[in-house]
Length: 83
Image (cartoon, rainbow, N blue to C red; front, side, top):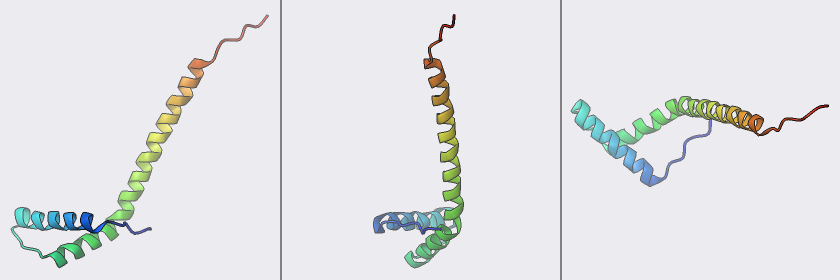
């Protein structure tokens, strides 16, 4: 699995959200290092599942779209008169 690359700005925002979650939901204080380690762990563990699900959803959407395009093409066909 290709690791998820985040900009430093994205990572900083997520770390801030993790810290807020721990503070508001668990009444616990977690530092920057702890939040970053948690982010790295969760990203490593969950990313393959989330990525595969996204691919599955995209494949399903594309298949539905191709089915619709196929139907649209059939409606464009003109009848051929035979004698």
